[in-house]
Image 1 (cartoon, rainbow, N blue to C red):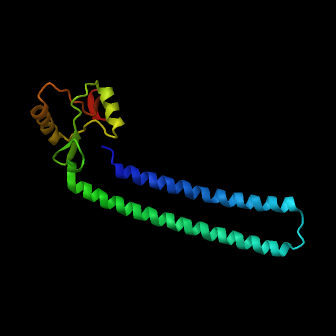
Image 2: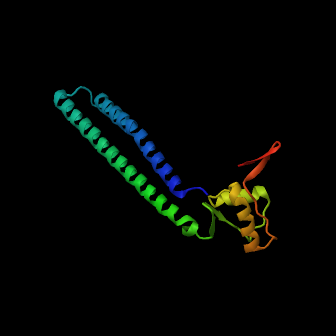
Image 3: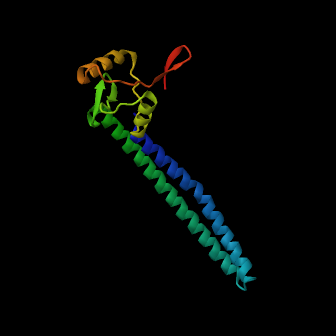
Length: 172
């Protein structure tokens, strides 16, 4: 089961990193615009005054970008704390917080009982729901078999996320 909160946390980090990468591009664009302004207007009679205004503008832009970066960093920190809190709450719920899931020991499982697929299609079906095929620990494997037989009868196929790698079986 892919952790949606982890996915959110990764996406937020990626978005902030992408925004931070754009800051130097914005500054470069401003610098080029200023150079173009000088070239287009030719020599200014009051160059000193213009230079002072441009330096003030650059300082203001730099200050504004620093504030934006600080705010983004604070939002990321707050989001990370919120995600951590939600992870703790979800962990305390076990599988109870997820519709259609059941818990065996400390692992969560979901059975798609009306879907009859081969292993590859079952794997794809799970991935389309942001899940993976079951990979029960050895201690849980027999409990899982018993749960499926007791709940759904012995006529249902259950695909696990293992595959043959030469002479041994491994989890995907």
